[in-house]
Length: 101
Length: 194
Image 1 (spheres, one colour):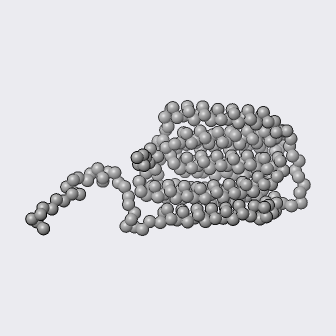
Image 2 (cartoon, one colour):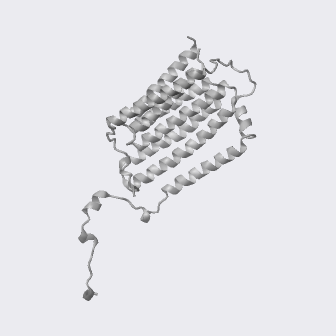
Image 3 (tube, one colour):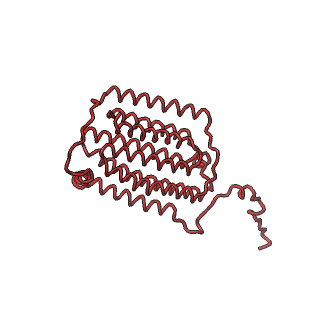
């Protein structure tokens, strides 16, 4: 039988994989954004698990807000990427160090 | 093993395997498509937990809008697939850190022993969407308005960042910058020539 612990372990595993993804793909800014989306997904899954097992719908309302904020975040992030690409003609993260001082 | 267990293990193994593939591939288009698979399977998982409204929202809003936006940007920018192999040190670090994090989370989860009960399907006569709407428009109405404002700010910011008139659109070209010589930029005008 599938219990709450199963779901929680799945969610923790997803979160840890996406943390590893941020380390591994630190050269590719698009993959970094995707790893952040994956992290948000695992957090949302956690919210839904607790909402389901404690029989309280408020957790799902919170997930609704997180989804809206995540959509806004990725829209602005992609806009920044597009304007960065237009200015620099590349997306190499190690070249974005001009504000070093 | 009942059908729910089989479905759970199938869906979670697909999600975990494709997220490992996501962080390992170099091709950004493949990564975006894998992300579609992950989101879709997670929506199934949310359906199994009676969160129908959010599962549908995840598929419609995320797979339908945000990931299409990702694909759109990838195609628009025409990024050449570069070999982005990280240093070995970073790979080791990432694996060690994520294993430590997972071990800690695992210990917390098992320490608490969340009364491993399975809630029986509550025979509620109202749907999930109805319940969320009821709570959203009464208790959380202020947060709802703030969310609407955040989305408005995101729209305006995304347009404002990319709205550039042609003559101000400066573009850096390092190759040309290197080739510039003193002669092409600097002109000395003597007094008697004026």
